[in-house]
Image (cartoon, rainbow, N blue to C red; front, side, top):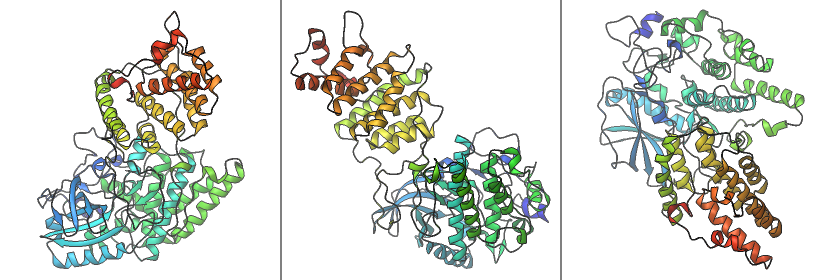
Length: 587
């Protein structure tokens, strides 16, 4: 029965169709670790990561038509941002409220049956009533020119699977932060009588501000017949075998506890680094959800609190009577884990343990879980940097001339009242170069520059770029301790990297100048940077913006102290800007 249900996606065969995680990408050796290891079309997660909608790429039936620059009702389509097996996703502007939305336009063959469409609209409208900070909201459902569409909250960020691929299992505070917010979302949906049916890492969004949002609530209703999950439609997989509950595998009625089981499997994957069950086929994985026993989490993660491991395994209990009955009960036990950790580490306290309340209250932002500014190390030679440098200079120069203001800015959502964020959310870009360009366009955005470091951990060259901009930003905002820490990191760079040391010493000069310590600032410059008979470190200062600021600071120091400049300083102090190197941030 299970094999029939899972293999019937591929007509004429009894074997599930193999799946790739990304087009033209190498596949994991273990089929069970593929993003959709059961059957069906491929996935294109990065293309959908900033929408809160994760659909399957490809699929049979229904021809897509690019709707860019067209209008569907009150939604003006701006650009296509994702394509899936059952829908295409567009960034659109809701003209009546002047806000951006993710517009999901359904595949024609999925909406050909009027009864099916009516049921889908009813379910989607029910989900639209869920107004919770940890749930991606459905705004409206409509029909226009033969197109069925769903307008959803537009969320910038990345999904939990992408997070795990990039960063690996999170530390305990971050893991608890994610689990509590997902549990809060499931509590709200259960109170509304809505079952998700497809909880998995791809449907859990993490925004750059640290908020967790669960995607596709209720959209799974498309594949339901009555209360039974339909696994026979080509191109549709309802309930991924890696995360399916025993009830789903058996074809039984599913309720809130089914979502809790899938949540437990997702949490296990997040903490252990891999799902609890693996197999050669989707069928073998599905069977293990009924008969298999997961390796105890404490064996693979002995550093975790035993109570947290017990919570995860109780979520994955085969029998409903042994499983958590409500998400609120999960939240209570997670709170106990937090309290135990606070007792063991009293100096850390709640500052290191983000919290979220049940209901539409604000949750913690990334400030409570952000990574520290990374120390700089010796950077390897990077020919690409030399190719990219003129482009970065040009982009920075345009920005400083004023053309960069407002680029990629999104209109504020007047209906969002649960969170006040000074910086816009910064979407994960496909490459580190694009992430740097995005930060340049936003200008003085701490979040944007931190995103370069946090989203691309191995790109040390661009960490240097981001840290330089962050240091100057902190200086402008009078965050002197943060700025000083970065400048000190540059000073401590190896002697083989004098340009970094020069930037660090120049930063110290600026820092003392900003604090009104003009004599100390001048002496710092004379000691470490001032021109001399031999080559001086100021000649190694390759950052045009820093050179300009340093020149102004030294002139101000001399003016405040009523000191004439020494002859050896005049060439530097009177040096005029030359091309893009002066006034533009150096990469």
